Image 1 (tube, rainbow, N blue to C red):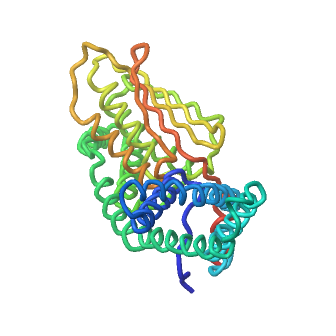
Image 2: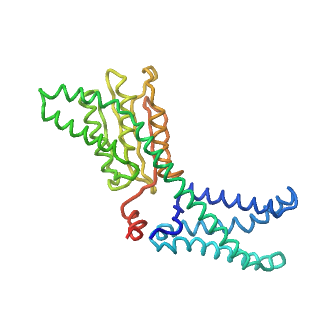
Amino acid sequence: MTPALSSPDYRNLGMQLRILMVAQLITAAASVLAGPDLAGAMIQFAAYAFHVESPLFITLLALYAIAPRLASMPDRLVVATPVLIGMAASVLWEGLMRHGYPDRFGGGILRAMILSAGFAVCVLIWLDWRMRRLSPALIEARLQALQARIRPHFLFNSLNSVLSLIRSAPAKAEAALEDLAELYRVLMSDNRDLSPLSREIELARAYQELEALRLGERLQVTWRTGNAPSDAYLPALILQPLLENAVYHGVEPHAEGGEIGIDIFARAGHLHIVVRNPHRPDAPTRQGNRMALSNIRERLALHFDTEARLSTHQAGGEFVVQVVMPLLLPNLEEAEHGEKDA
């Protein structure tokens, strides 16, 4: 059965900010309607905000705490729980105000419950419209467009390298063609879902082997993944384009080649990917660096909203790209989705 309303990710910072934004807009609209003039509307806004914001923060904290369990609840509870929590928070807040300031807060608990329930339903309807009617279509189209922008320049270089090996090393040429076919199979597939880190490392290494046919000893890649959870989930084809970008801008332009360092590790509930490649100020500038990184940055935002980031800097003759995203492990995914899918 399709739920009446879909459940937002209450642990996503972007989602929390949107809820707060909607709360302010509703409060402002109510203030304009209730106030006789601009000054009266501003006074009314301050009064309404006093009653709205504290219960809202309490509600968001409670939803953050129970978010993993909320996703596995029956559909009706997924919708009813935020409404009930909001009502309880409003009652708690109004009760505290009545106890502390009996002269200024003499009643209105029932009214607060009704208003908080109505507000919660309005927010859920708006978020549902955004997620179900607007976001999926936009995200699907955008992900496909972004995926198509990943540079395929190495295809022709790889094919030329394979052709040169067919007679001298047919087994090596066959293995290279298998790597190339697998890499392009993934490139052409639907990559909206998340992928295990072990799979992404496998694909990136396949790409590395293809480039090694052409660049030989000029290409050196050092992998440091000892502290990386191989079963962590991340957007498909994030790692391979980072390596491709490092090869294209840090190794290819230099006759002596260079070493690329890839560090992947988990820390404080986040997955970190750090890619370093040589950077020489006197090296010829190659176009496309910003496009490739913007591609990855946009895909991270589409998957994780404000919970992920990509940053770059130059230090010690290196260009460093760092990606930080939420650490998603299979047990968490199953806890959030397993029971509901069943």
